[in-house]
Image (cartoon, rainbow, N blue to C red):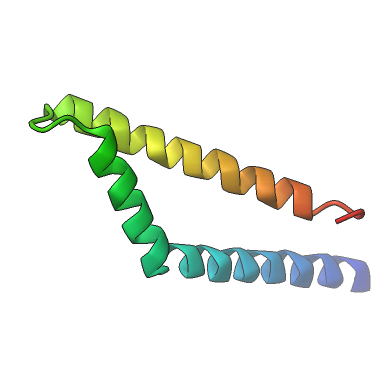
Length: 79
């Protein structure tokens, strides 16, 4: 039906917009250098592999949380 087709197109459009936004952030050189700087400041001089993994995963979780929050806030009607 027409309603199902509109819903499918909306879903495809949402996925396309998500991928475009993700590509924009992942390829942004300022964001890359900022996270590299944060990781380098957070790690001691000779970190273990475990410490490096903890810091990198922590930064990934922080970034995901922040951008998910932005997505939620700006997806509301009032935004």
